[in-house]
Image (tube, helix red, strand yellow):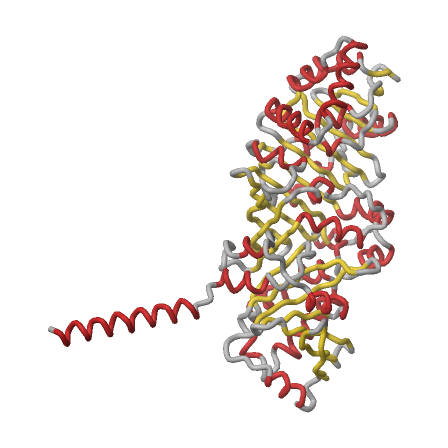
Length: 529
């Protein structure tokens, strides 16, 4: 009996030891991913994650999707790096099947570049890099160096005559870039103890997805500052102010990037305009059906409960410290016209409103109404009418206070009501142009290319951004830094090979379910004039 007890105790101790050792050495995909992502500098606006296996490359070798987004030169550089370095016999077994993270970072001097982050598999030893450096006719000239105080390598790739800078981040994690500045930035980066970014979200991501896209909205503006000479561009304006992060999984389609996943709101950060839509239910999008055929880009908003939206907007104005200004404006308006515009507008507001920018740089607010004929008398009373159907508001900032921050571009706009739509613009001529489109049904929704693109989108949402690349080119030419626009225009394949892109938010548990779609042109319409 005594021997049996001793034997049992020994077995229990052995089992406990094996269990501890097993779990200690077990790296779950989520924890390993988060460990790698913690080394990526937190100024990355976008991170693209995929697995370094041949099947992934085979899929995208059959189409121009990745090449069109990243550019032929960069995709060739990355592919050459994979073939010459990662697929080298000395290293291949340690990097096959490992996840690759490609992050986009702003740099100095109006520039941005890509950082690659990757971990070596078990059994890797830095001695192997030294062995590769001594190997003859490898196509690589590898020089040991220090980058930002850390051990690294300066790798000259003969095939493309470029240098690639690699930093050893410890624990067999490596960061590398064709930009020496970015490699140094990665080397000296020290993650904050309270870092609240992709690291935590990555642990909950689907490990079976073909690829994942991470978006940090707070870092879009710094990136745009490098890309755009117009620092006030309103492209993605509301999204850039959102305190949130997305983790989206790729759904493969041969002619489109399609990602979906969750955008998580940072609740301990100040509210933004888009936070107001997390308390609504997704709504079927109809307003886009009357966007003009010249639409370059648009941002659409949809609410299931307009009265709740107006109440939430009022609370947001209180938190923003502008309630006094708002009350003063509407009290003055009521005293001078007898119109209680806040109540009347809230009662007649329907479920959708949008801002549309055309290729001719016209800007419209298109607002769906429950009954346009009932709102018209109130609009006439608060405006100076320049014709029977068109008037200009007598008061500043009404769209901002009635519909929120996204409508601040209309300070004292002109208006007209067509059927059950209130249309705002900054000039009367713009309204005349839209009226012509409306009466003659010259809508972008009447084109085959748009409808094929629209078929890929979610039917319901609360916030949706859309861009038509061909129509947007004149605006991008004006607003982008010259080098970036030249690259955009001349790259073949490039972004001009895409018809359009859409980014949709649908409220879900106080966060947003997110759909991102970017579709190539049809083959017979690929030319952009």
